[in-house]
Amino acid sequence: MVYGHGRWPVHNAQMPTWRSWLPHPALVFVVLAWGLNFTVIKVAYSQMSPPAVGLVRYLFMFPLLLLWCAVVRQPLRYPPGRFWAWNFAGFVGSGVYMVLFLEGMRTAPAALGAIALATAPIMATVFSVFAKQERFTWRLLLGSLVAFGGVAVCILGQHRGSDGSMWGVLLVLASAVFWALSIVLYKPLLSEATPVRVLTLSFPGAMLVLIPYGWHSVAVTHWSLVSSKGWLAMVYLVLVAGVGAFAAYYKGLADCGPAKTSLTQYFVPPVAAIFATLVLAEKLVWQEVAGLVIVIAGVALAVWKRPSVTSERTSTDQAGPESPQTSCA
Image (cartoon, rainbow, N blue to C red; front, side, top):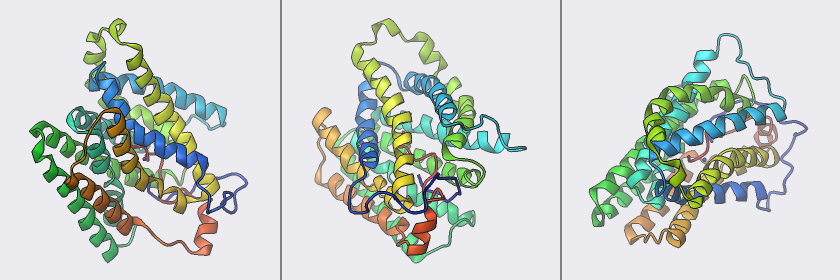
């Protein structure tokens, strides 16, 4: 689930290489992977606690990111004097965000978690305005109000459920705030290196949050009792929704450009709702369906920009409205 502007090299790409009227298979994979991610987390929670899921996922994913850098020949060293800036971005984006998200998904329904997290692009744009990375527009203000109105409609629909599920949705919404903040932090870093290198070398910063959060749960979990279903869920979170979806996202970015790639964020909540209904038997009431439509419309209104021919040509050499922290989880 990626939104700032930063230059990074795309080899042999002067124009998007994928036909604009065709859905790129890599981006279809991203939407399906991140949409199903919310349901798979619920499956993992049936086998292990959220803190254990978070730390184990991190411990498996970090070596794979290092391997990815080695395969694509990215140097595993920080630019001079940038160690703390890179790791602080990871602390916020892969650490604080992840803890809030995992705790929120403990009680939030899968579909509503996806809807709440879909507000992150708007928050990122708002923070970018305050950081003077973007210009204020009335479209941004109107879209923000519409999207958050949609979240409010969804939360009101939770009156039929428990207070715990409402609290979970609010925690996921709080995680979206930190996700958006991390996007602003990552934006200048993308002018220094490729997204995969920035993501990998910022990952150690998350240890300051994830190890205290998860070490006790990992220690007391009876791993021999975790079923194959639980381990398959963890494999999915690491390989499919994690490293695999990131790789597919950057492939889509290189082939299609940022304008089309950023549209993936609008399809994740509906896909998450479909998977939650089919797999978890979650049922959406009319308030939640209406809220989903309103949130997607608000996000689209706030962050969508009609690219010019010139900007679309040059955008393939940039990280457009995306950053390495686009994933929903």
